[in-house]
Image (cartoon, rainbow, N blue to C red; front, side, top):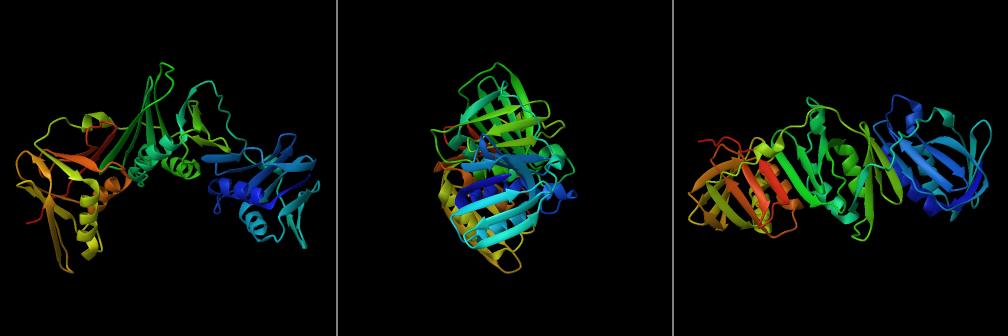
Length: 370
């Protein structure tokens, strides 16, 4: 194998697949990236067996086709430090790889490319398309409440609940539920529920361009999902198990409804927690009365108190929350007006964008201390 390509394009490709290359893998081959040079150009693939990322064709002069598996971190560090604007890579039949750029030359021993795991096959005959910016926003506005506790592995992923042309993206961690809706351009008539690992979704959101004109395709089998991101593809295994019946959690019963400026309540909670080192031990208390909301926090270091006007419909109420669970929601919403529905001081609250059912968040309260 012998290729000549741009250092910048090569480094971009290596950066793109970096999150799928494990640095603490039990199998050394999983610490490698696979370089394939053929008539279509140069491609780079990395895989940790749960998620695989493969670049689209990277522009290169293919002097001689071939493939090699190289330690991803070592190879990326070498490319990053090369002095020239172009890179020449030569690989012999024993996988000895010579990397040249300007006056620099490195020789590293690659691994047998035949040992590199094959990408799962996912045909593109069962799938959907969505605007890149919208998918990026949907992930950003829900992925923060994916469970990190492996006691119920299915909750470590995001549910894609598709009914006709309606997509609902849901994440649950046992203390809160995040739900985001979107109407897809196509309707294949199926009802589909698949759970994608949160790590995969988080990495996809980082790769996705913020461009409404770019459509992203996602396709799936019973075991895997493939995201076609134009400049690369991401293939991930799906999580198995029964996802919770989240829709029944969003009660329509409302005792007290508050309409508030998102930025105002976010900033107020952030200020209240400045005296707290542990949000689990030091909740914030919300006291709603006379169309005002008072936000307070009481810790060993001291106390904080702040109040401001809101629109209130219903009786007065006092309730306490882990402040992070509230600020996580308010940080990801773009609309300025939000509604918060309460039924009692011990029941979950439901946060929505005013006038919309496309954003729903359920947050469990903490028991008020006397």
